[in-house]
Image (cartoon, rainbow, N blue to C red; front, side, top):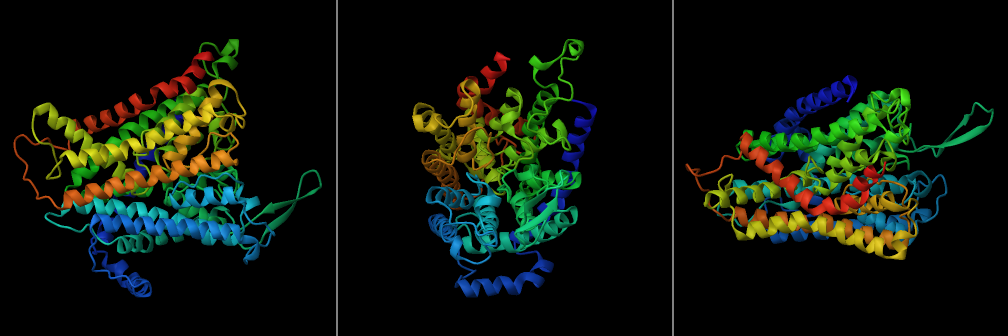
Length: 567
């Protein structure tokens, strides 16, 4: 890595932590009902929502009812988003006269945005009307993120409560996540993005004169509002097909930097929220440290690989440095460069964001391996808002259980004994996305429908398929590129993976929350493993990496690793 890239990474991490500390404290107050200033301003609207929706805010749900509410809400969201796409030509705010979306694309998109994946098998500016972008997709950007945050809060209550049947009220948690956190942050950030030059208008196009004395029509729309929540909510679906590489979504260096920060901001802050809510701030800091211990090395390797470039293109007079002049710039914006593109790639895949400012398909084999592996770890290195942290807590439960086996004691985590049921659910939540990735990839490479749309033969084509199923099952949404996925096979297969990859771990987490809430709190003893120190951080990181390596090393060996060796 160059000194510039090193300095960029250090500043990025420092600023991210500095912003996460106050935000984490604020979110803890929101969920504990102690955000007095915000409640004075938004409290009347919150109570109006409850009355309109006939929600009893005081009702405490057992985990089964909480899970059922999540599933019914998500199913209704899929139906609504699908219907709006299929009827968009008959609905208002379609100034470009775009037709109804085909059934397979509409179904895939509805599942994608409901599961916070935001995988796109279409070009946004040429497929969806202003109304569909705003009322279907942007709304799901808020509520799908809110669902993940709500489930995390339910799990936290499982640790803090004792002898309790309930883990909270889903409708209250969803409303507070959206109303007090996502909406205010997105409103402020959207205004800021408009100031950087991102459009926010109902005009269909802008006519410009080119240098060749011709005219060109540029697609416009309510872009800034969608970019704000797609970043903050770790959604990632682009208004434009080029996503963060499009100058209307990411016009300046300031928009580029702030969008990279927004990707990880809430996910990082929630670790500190967790520490405050369980009355163990060092525990939240330990989880955050574990995430950084994985994120930083992968970012360093990815940046090094992209700045080094393709070794077969190194000229003779450059041999001592063994680097390609300017690094690997294929598929990247010159204004961003290799370092900023690599940092965005690892940030967006460590979170379940999926936005891109460069084409991952054009990365070097090792440069592309890093982002792909971050997704395959289970989207727990920051991960989606809420979903990343509850996924990491499942790994923490496994780590505590393994440590208990080593010393011959019943494992404890935050005062709760970890027993067989919690281990079964944690294992189910961790392995479900991995199963979807490997089985989906195996079916795709074995079927003509899966291989017929691969643009590149050999290991790179395999990497494209593996990345697609990793992205869908991990609810990331980014794409390697080079693989045509708007076919019946891929729209259906990826939709199934997105649904299972989202809701199987989610239900497992709620089951763990319900089980823990019923247990008594066990005071720590001399045999209790401290879970807020360096030893546990290293153990947790080791478990995450070991599971990822054992599960995916053979598949990665057939794709990016062998492609690198062939260079």
